[in-house]
Length: 203
Image (cartoon, rainbow, N blue to C red; front, side, top):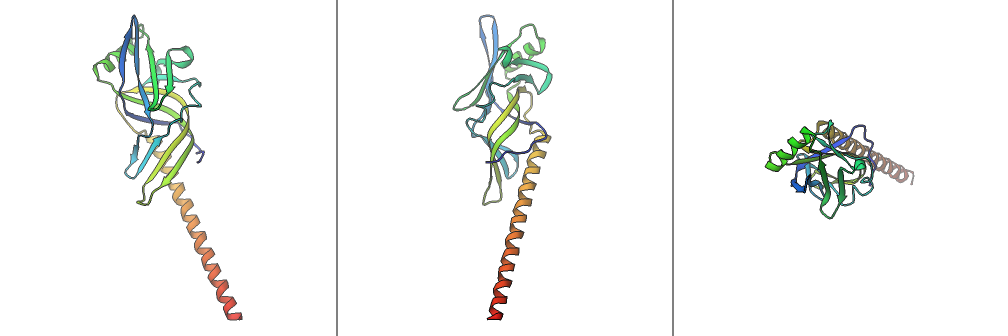
């Protein structure tokens, strides 16, 4: 298990099952912002998943609900009681209380209601993760713990360039370390063979 060094916030986007709900005069958008153990493909041969419990230490943090990760379009906030987040066996579930006086929020509500918007995303830092290099040469990251900053309703699914770059740096660092280990093993092996050869001659 590792604790990565991250310079930029990560984002993940995927299709979801958002729904709208009315309760008297109150309007809600609710659904899953992340599904556990579901593979995200970063590039062919590189995937990641979020493990159950990854959000358990961050749900009490100050988290916003946004539209398309736009910090000027705030739909809700857990500290204000307008965003509810919780983990269950499936993933990270959220409920946003829509402000009827906010035209952006109402427009999004209607788009989700019609099915025009059905993507979800979350912005976070990785705190702990596992890395698995498989026999076929592919690599998989399992995210074990995150620090959550925001969740978003999104128009289009996209793997952010910054996230891809971060993973590419991870991959290059792993290959570099493996190459250094291989070189060290070769040096030690050659050194051992040389020493054995010298002993044989002295004998």
